[in-house]
Amino acid sequence: MVMLHRCIVNGRETGKAIHIARQKVAKAINCKAKEIYFTSCGSESDNLAIKGVCYKNKEKGKHIITSKIEHPAVLHTCQTLEKQGFEVTYLNVDSNGMISLSELENAIKKDTILISIMTANNEIGTIEPIKEIGKIAKAHNILFHTDSVQAIGNIKIDVEEMNIDLLSMSAHKFYGPKGVGALYVKEGVEFEKLQDGGHQEKDKRAGTENVAGIIGLGEAIELSYKEFENYNKKLIKLRDYYISQVEEKIPNIKVNGDRTNRLPGNANISFEGIQSEELLYKLDEKGICASGGSACSTGNPSPSHVLMAIGVSSKMAKGALRVTFGIENTKEDVDYLIESLSQIVSELRK
Ligand code: PLP
Image 1 (cartoon, rainbow, N blue to C red):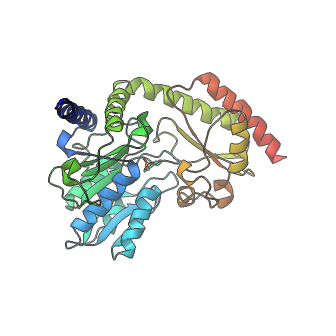
Image 2: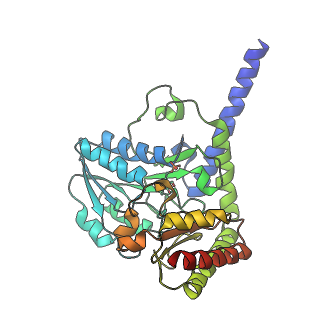
Image 3: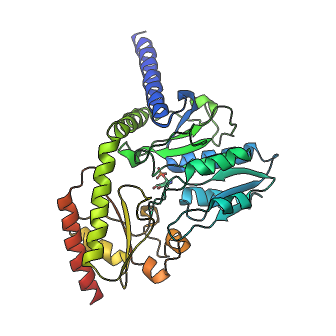
């Protein structure tokens, strides 16, 4: 009896805590709490959004539009759908990583059911024209999904104002716990569930909820937008200082991505004549963590698909270093990084 009572109380408390987290996420992106579905990560959210919408709407059409620089969670999902009879158009990007709105309009066909374009790129930080894409999608009555895994917490997103129908996020990208994500799906947009089982998440995502993770995600998203202006200013200052110092102190480099229209903490620079792996190894010895192309493709020796898409030569792409500054970094950290980089690059070039 006591056990049963405790279970009911805990069940109620858990449900309430999940509901509060849902409200916090909804407030951050300006939607209703019931439009948020919790998942295990950004990849799951991308899969659920894209496959879910495609399977539900396959009678209406089988054409999807995405870009060449999406994260593998989107690109590989699209490739799987191609094997299942869907047709995918992969939009080009310019040398800064921006899609062209006129190319997007021209790619739309009678049977286009979904546009999926990332909010901000994980490797080069470029921010896509999401509001304009949303407007085009709405005018053509096509659903619009955006992978906002890198953007949430870093830039402001208003799904209403930007005409976004589905949006993916992942908690650890905004200082929340690992292993939990969320998907926003506009009320009225139908999608098929991918996982059979219980009736959790309004019957759209079976499986016991990661309660601690969900609570952490809710707290993290609330905190990141509370401190948004301060974080942003600080990160932009560190990023721009780093880029200008590298340009001043190290010859034969190339800054990849847009100079200003990029995520506040992201800097991606190619060093001629250097292999990223060697650079990363030497930086690691000095206690500095960075990444070659994308952290997700670490161990993949082929040059980054994002850098190739923006026209970086494969030689320069192989020498790319992505640095992501966080809220705890200081100017002294950047100075230490520059000093270490200058020394390592000149040694490796010898
Ligand atoms: N989309 C983007 C843009 C990402 O940067 C990542 C991860 O880095 C993902 C999706 C996948 O998210 P997760 O690692 O939570 O599955």
